[in-house]
Length: 330
Image (cartoon, rainbow, N blue to C red; front, side, top):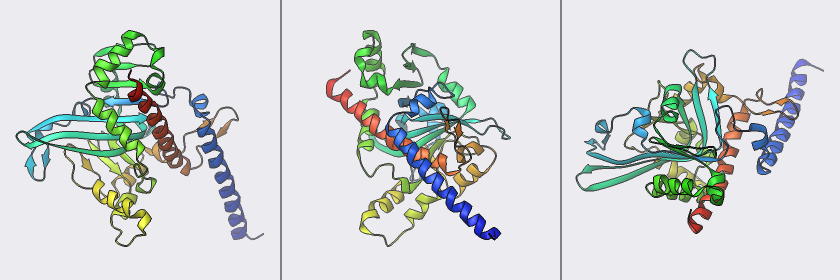
């Protein structure tokens, strides 16, 4: 068989194998088998938990007094938070020229409430599908003065609240002291954050896969920036589209509009970061099937596929847990 034909045949075989493997992974995801494979992951994060960053400016190091909007200085920032339903946590950039970063994936929101005119407040929010945090920012977030650090996986400190969805879904398993802490320190002052994420997760048009990744970053090269792929720019530039994807085009244009407190990356910036050695791990597969000894790290598309599937799964699980919480109260 000629070399070219041999290569084509190998390509067809590989494509078939990968397609079958992806289908198997998705089926296992729906069967919640990933928890058994992952455990709590390399960072101690439980799968499927809610992370609330109470004041994003304190994590990113940005100064609210330097914020502007539509050419006007921001007079006051009332709220500036991030909430994300974490589906996975991994370290990216091992072996690079800079320290590795922490990558959290899942559906989330960046939201800021601010004023440029005394007494009048504007609320802006953007969907995110992950966080890239430097090692120092990760340490800052995790080592802040603790309000509570128990054995149930619940972590409350002055900067973050980390609540496993299992706790939200089954509050009866908590001690009354823990229930009171969550209610008083998190759910009451930040109910709008949980409500906003609930609404976003409940909309079929939210987190469209066509837009690609949306990662809020504290990376040294892209400090306090939402990194987006080229896909969202391609959609925002479309002029003639079928009726079914008009909303994708409209949302892409809206997403790229100015937002106070952070910036949207320019075309190509995210791709350059992925291709660089700085966070080389983000573009690779990372699952390993411990039961069968099959490594999936050789399939470049696995990472992107898994991020998308994880986001869909995390949306469903967060929505189910938080809806039940609102219906019965904690």
